[in-house]
Image (cartoon, rainbow, N blue to C red):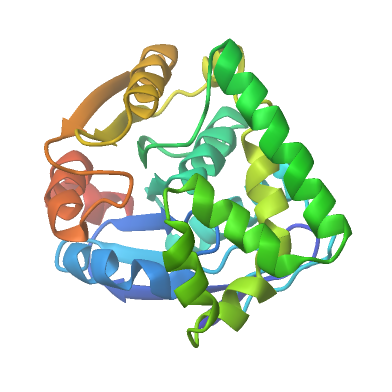
Length: 267
């Protein structure tokens, strides 16, 4: 993997593959660049796909004092390394990061996100507050395993499945990234969609959800699309929060497709 320094000097590791207009993939909670390997391979015939280890994960560094602003700076550094005219796709909490970066002035013209896990509405805000409080207690106590289990339960992983995962080779890696769950939690604020802040997003944006995702998740994506000045919404029939890369890739390819001559002129 290559590395680039973020604004505060933290090294951010990234991987580049394919050929064509640059497209940066932003992973969700507990993911690294390799998590998006299948999706990246499916997109590589049409794009130069850049995946990266977000701060505190994989081969990237971490100061231990992460804020939303620092992660925005990390993404800006990766987009700069990707090249002129880069587009961005964000998965789950990575979508929230992509939106925050765009609202802060990240120069992207095309932006797509898949189910950023906002929880608007009175009950959703109470739920988010409880989850935030519990996560902070677990991390403060150094109980990384329980923090990972909390995240897994929130994503719909059954208790018995989580128990099996604890015995799997991947578990130590997940625990090593447990502290970054606080970074994703911060990206989502109190759970409400920050419509006023996102009104500054100038990129043409596509907000995607799965047709089999929960009703609140689907509703949140529609509200998000309406909050974006140039946003539109799309539902992928038969998909859930764990969307199949083979279904997602053609949708992203269609949205991010650029005229070859225009790309060559920009690069």
